[in-house]
Length: 320
Image (cartoon, rainbow, N blue to C red; front, side, top):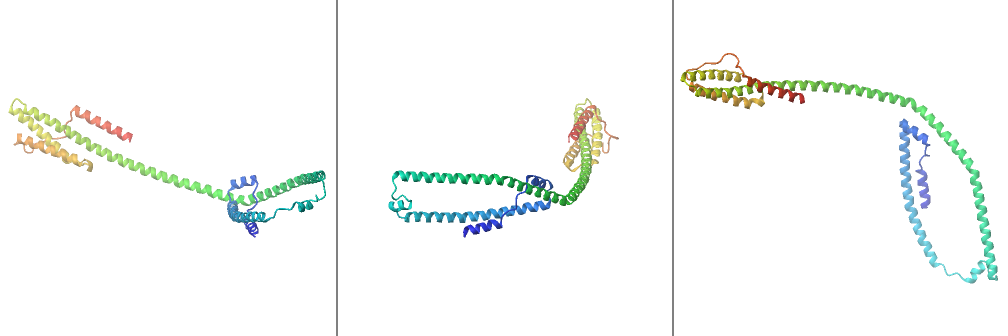
């Protein structure tokens, strides 16, 4: 019963006949929907066959185990054969040892001759069926090739249509990608230009504040020279000149628009200018509104330092 059930399950889950190598190669190249469905169906049949085989194997294993136990039990229950009955069964009753030996040799020779003739007949049948089998395989190969060519011819227009649609989709995707690339490039260029503009504006403000810091240092040196002047008239004259330049510089720094990142430094610079102006006013109390007209002249040393800072900024901008 178990063997019949396993055979029935295997027959219901039997997969389709495998295709030829040429068939598989063409199917792999076309990758059509019909071939994909066939492969999925064959895979499902293979899985079902494996499941059925596993069930049958477990059932067959249990049956063989029970059969082995039953045979062992029957072997134990078999009684010891009687020598006289065995001699009668083998037709050895009344024969001498030489006659028994000759009989056994004759029976062995008969068995050998039978086996030999059976093998010769089997070889003859196999040799006779080999051409028929080759012819049947050749016919099957021709039939499969005709079916393959017919299926390829049927699916070729659809595959060409799909390939054309796929090529058009790739072309459209490349066009969209190029458009996105151009948009990103334009956006990046605009952002880079805006960033460069902002950095140059910050650099100009930094340059102006650096020049102001150098002027403050220079005016402090002039004040020290004024304190060491020979006469009070010369001292007052130097202090007035320094006060006019400091007021001019303070006015310029107040009107300078700076970025948020430079507001702290700008505030410190204005505070230094106010302190310096207050010190100069203590030396020149009567100089209320004196201010140097026009832009302040820079010394060669100032020009050199500002040019060096500008070159450093341009190098950093180029590297970025």
